[in-house]
Length: 66
Image 1 (cartoon, rainbow, N blue to C red):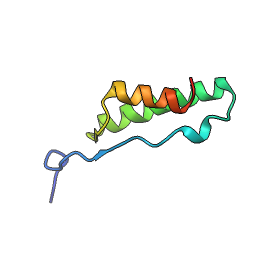
Image 2 (image 1 turned 180 degrees about the vertical axis):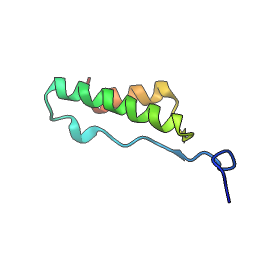
Image 3 (image 1 turned 90 degrees about the vertical axis):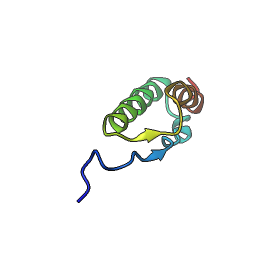
Image 4 (image 1 turned 45 degrees about the vertical axis):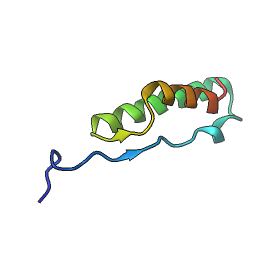
């Protein structure tokens, strides 16, 4: 049986937030905060992301037009 330490981290990109562009700016800022919280949770669980954190932030702010 594999333990958490034996498993290799998964690699993957965060989901796209483009579909939220049409929402009011305060709501888009909430989605920005949610995106960061989701990312932190995945990293804490050992998920290795393909984007650096800076790339992630740049992409999410671009997608949300913030």
